[in-house]
Length: 114
Length: 114
Image (cartoon, rainbow over all chains, first blue to last red):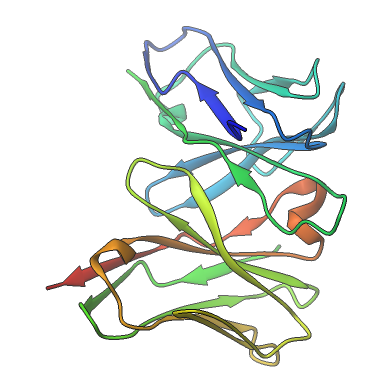
C-alpha cells in the first residue's frame, strides 16, 4: 500500500493564479481531510469529507474549495491564490470502522504564493 | 472553542529523558494523541491514550494523563538523535478524530544536544 500520497510536492504560484492539489489514498478510508501547517500555528483543518460526494468546511475554509468525486481522491482547489495561502498542505485519511484511532497523513505539499 | 497548548521548543542532552507537555481545554476530549513529524515529512502517530486511562507505556514512550488538570505529557526515555522532530499533541472526542478532524497543538520542537 502506498498509503496517502499528495501531488505536487512543491509549487510556486503568482498571486491570482489557480491550482489544484491532489490527495489519493489506497486504504479504502471513508474520511479525508485537508490541513494547512504554518510556522507557530500547528495544523488547521481546511475542509473535510465523510464520504464520496460529500464535503464540509473546517476551521479555515475561506479561499479554498474541495471535491470528493471518488472515494480514494480528495482535491483541494485554490481559485485565486493569495500570499496568505503560502503554507504546507497536508492531506489525511481515517476510517470510522474497526475502532481505528489513527489519521494517516500524506507527505505534504509546500506551496509558495508570490 | 477547543484549544491545545504546547511549548514550542525543548532541548535535551542525548541519553537523557525528554518530557513534552500539553494542556487542552475541551473537557469532552476522549482521545488524546501524540504525533511525530520529522523534517520534510508528514505526521505519524506515535501513541494515543483514552481519557479513562492515567498512563500508557510503549517501549521508550510513556504517556501520562491528568484529566482533572487537562494535562498530557509524553516522556521519551534515553533520547536519541533520531528523536529530533516536532511532536504534536492532538485531541478529539471521537476515535481517529471522526468526521471533523483533530484539534492539534502548535507542536514542540525537540532538539537533541550531543
